[in-house]
Amino acid sequence: MIFGGFCLRIPSVMQLGSRRYHSKSPLYLVYFGSDQYALAHLQALIDRESSLKNYRIQHVVTANDATPVAAYCTKTGLDYSTWPRGSNECAKIVASRVKDWQNDLARVHPPSIDQKQSGILGLVISFGRFLPTPLIAAFGQGCVNIHPSLLPRWRGPCPLLHTLLAGDTVGGISAIRLPTDEHAFDTGPVLQQRAIRLDTGRPLTPSQLGAFLTPYSIEVMFEIIGRALTGNLSEALSQSALAKRCRLIPADAPRPNEAMGHVDWANQTASEIVRLWYCLSETPVHLTSLLQIRKPTSTASDAIVRFVGQNPVAVPLDDPSEASSCCQPNNLLLLQNAAYLLQRVPHEFPPGGVMYLRAQNQRNYPLVPFAFIACKPHVSFPKRSWLAVPSLHIRMPGARHFRPLTALDVYNGVLHESESRKLSSIYDLPHGFHPFSGFRSLSNPLTSKIEYRAPLRDTVIISLVNKVISSDWNISAPSGLALDA
Image (cartoon, rainbow, N blue to C red; front, side, top):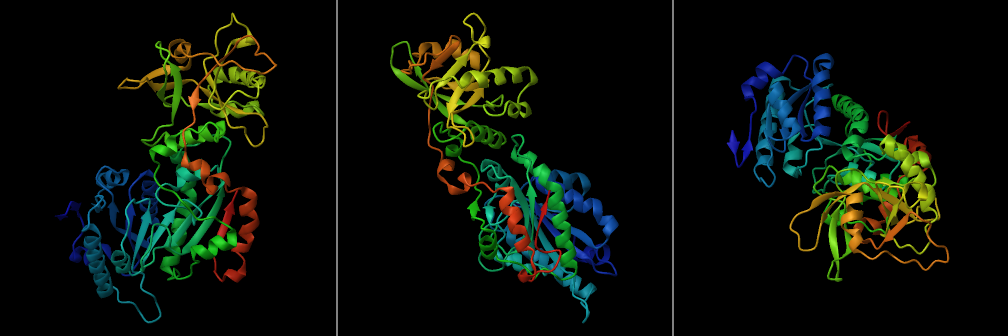
């Protein structure tokens, strides 16, 4: 059936009675998911379906035919349908089919007096579409969303990205019931929640964080299925109560926009800029700044710079080992030496200023293959932080396209047209230091929001977990909040 751009491949009512239902009625699932994170959960359901025998995947709904979930369904023969963005009929069609399945199930397996009917459960994991109230109400068991954050922190489509942007050292998984009254994304009562320590020893992309959280999320998903089989999905905590008890600040996790890619050298540390680069590397948004250059006509102008290609590195001023996790081995020693040399730069060197260094601090030695850009001081180190940039893409004034340049190309082909910055410090720069007027700060909305200035830390969550799982919450296992090391 194809209606309003909605492609439906669903077994008939008679097939439900003859092929899908058995003498002991299991829990039937309608799965809503789209991306790689959702696919991992769907595969786990398929892998365990034959061995557990207490649930069946009745149907899959995904955003479009290009999603990883759609490709998997096509390969394995799973019944699935697509929900194109902006379609108004998809929810009505799915709701109608769910009601048909519910009626078939009631006829084949009428609920006994002492046994609750297992029914049909909607399971929503990284779907990307809003489920309206009539669709949610069609499910006998309701709809549950498995969300990769500690709600109400990071509500929205990109919780993994914002967890990383904020520098949270604790993430988590939340299972929420989608309410049948009017609601917004990710605002339902919490059925299950698990806090998990995150690996902050190296920068991560959202997909890498998703891969790390997936086993925990799958475990929570099966706990929810177990509760649904026993009719125990009514016990839940409102997110407002959870936020109050745990002192969690509700925060949104929108899709990244162009402004989120702006670099504010005066208000972002080098480590924060590196985190931003990794977070945006899987999105259409680029890390962007303006480079001050001087054209041959002596008129100052700005070139647009995108930091794409090779990853930038935070120079390890206080701990030289920090660069080892995100730097090529042959460059590690160069950065450790640069960390020592850059501490000699006078304090008035401005954020966004560019410094080039020569190896061994001598004029006749080659330049180190990085442009070192001054950034906001790190909280644990009194002096400015430095970003080491190996390459970038630049669009010169009047040009139509970006062209890739290495840091040394920039020195030889762009910055030689710019006047070297003269420092008034009584301490002269040693030989082998080449300072330039560099980048201008651009306003970034992330620097002004409290949730990005107050990351979630281990000590906070650990101290609050015991309160959350205490008996006064009146939630029996497996509900509550558990912390995994």
